Image 1 (cartoon, one colour):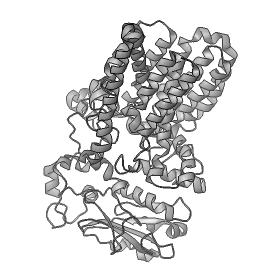
Image 2 (tube, rainbow, N blue to C red):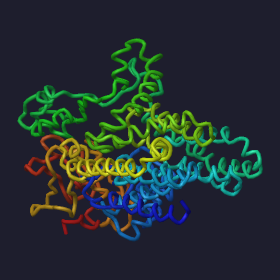
Image 3 (tube, helix red, strand yellow):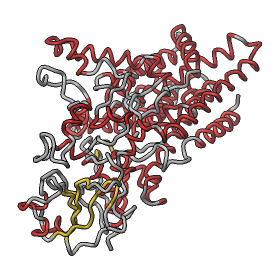
Image 4 (cartoon, one colour):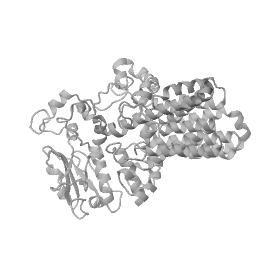
Length: 603
């Protein structure tokens, strides 16, 4: 196949991939997660002021919600915000483009490794990949950038090893840039580059000067990740990994689980019954579970009784190992997470158990890829060429970084560095079947594979676009967040009160909702939203904060402001409050300075 045919077919595949990535971005996934809002608002603030939501000028790592994410995806979102404005769909709009780029790069890497057929097959598999489609449609998945940068870097590195020294230097720099894409890359990319240098060492000896210059340049690019910005990258790693001093004899501490019976005993705060009748129950103030659907009762307050929950969680290991938890628990968890990533349940049947990452009943890959993946693995294992060794190395290393994190064995976003290798291996398997095993049956086999692929994508599209938005589990995980909160100008009722669905109030979500929905109406972002139960943050606020900032106050039960926390004494006036649709007050009052511009919907 000549280059012209390859690019024409690749363009058709890209078009097909676009058809499942761009439609209904504002409604599928349902709602909008707080991490998406944080990214969108940061892009909006950078566009207008050059500062993030905390007032930091052009940061490399964004504090966001305390997770210190790298800013590549935010800066790439700025032009989209400039062209199309600020909103839910606009916030997600850059990510389908990242997905399109991942299709193109899978095709190019497949072509560089094996030829045009494998390249087109790899691009087609990525175009219809549930894993890639899901990551392409949410602003919560900046890790999808790794499916673009890592294949691009490898394309350039392999071309450089074949006699193009300029590409070798560029490839090393691109691999260094990928370290800024997502946390797992900082573990995975150095290992992959070292493996590449070892596998292609003989070819690289002919380009020593280019290799040396490329290593110097890439080191300069990568060094800040491991030096200047180490406190930020380490902060996020410590949030999700299980390395550290044992806490109460265990591996770590998660949110306290509260069962339904306990909730029944604690929830009657409005009637004066129960132990929390006279004092504030901090957990109950955020979510009240007395009218939630039966399917969601166990999910209230973060209790998720998922039958597919991993047995390698710190809690499960602590229960099983007892006093041996600390010396044995961590290595067992890493091995268990790694094996979980290899399981058919994660890859082909149920996928990531978090419904924000994967609909229930859908694997990360299509089921029809299982035999293709097996044939591809067999071909790689029997192959002796450098390209086979490189792809095998990628397959082995792919699940490793996520295995060191809590629940990393089936975390789709942390494992996304693995995605291109899996589809390339499946493409290799499909090419083997088409070219070697049944040469006289190409038309039949090709037609059969196409029909099976179409059936697979049809099932996925039905689940994702029709059933997923109506799934109560998904609705709870998405709609309890900002998408369910109608703040400020959205649906202020005639009484001037902002109403939201019952059982959706969480402090962090409310904070993000106000930030996101008020942002277009504030003259000069970023602006702060000072919040916190019973913390009268305005008491210590300076004159500029009192004039410019928004204050959310969670008053004492029964929704009274304590005498020593009187906003009016500081020149503040109430500009909004939050109630459930049922009329019950959720307990959040919104204040601004009396001289500030009125909040939207209150003018």
